Image (tube, rainbow, N blue to C red; front, side, top):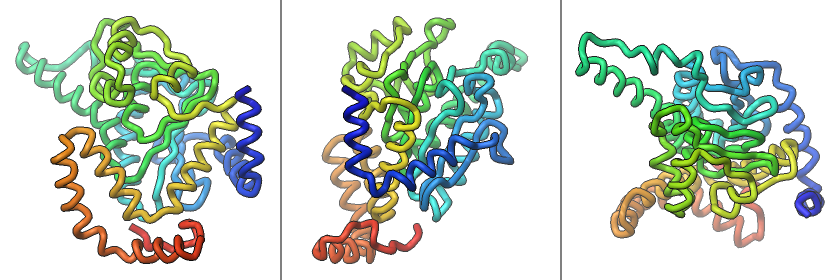
Length: 310
């Protein structure tokens, strides 16, 4: 049934499928990490879209020390890049990510520095805060982030995807909050963001306390992902198509929408409305409003409009 739905969707968008398919092939033929990064491959498959690929396929994209630093550097750069309007995140190889690279991270986690309990604790806290920023930087980035998950998404992978704006996966994808199995409570975002993503406290508690796997169908029905695709090629094509739709809109409108959605999630309705009024008292003065309104009246797509960079 799913394959029929996918074929139907591809037929519907036949006009845009060929360039997207070519972009997917280009993305999948990446030769390795993009300097100066050693764990990430960065590409620009279509106009205004940046593709960030976790690229340690031989280690199932396990998150080593370099990854935690490079994600911050990468997304800080993307946040300031006027040529980027939307980001797609995916994983190279057979799985999205196996989570934390325990062998590489052991010294930071198991051998903290300090002369006494207070100093050791202070250093551990700084380390945890630094790791938290690895995924918080995705949320802080004003550009919408679409994450495409195939295969396993374990431990830190769940922390990562819950910081993204839109989550897509393949039919063979599965998710696991793994931390209790290695003797710790998840501390870089899952326990804070997953309850707000799913909205089912009982299910969140079950996943976090039992470390059981959540498969694609349940991930879709629970709201963790919004779409499920037959395979990775269809997934990446779908993610790129969605990214193209977002990139074709006013960057003032898109980035303002993301920022206000996140603010409203963490504040009351009244506070969110007040923040929105303060935001739009300046943003409504953009030329993008008139350009978009004119295109709408002329029954043209927003993608035909030449919006200024932001």
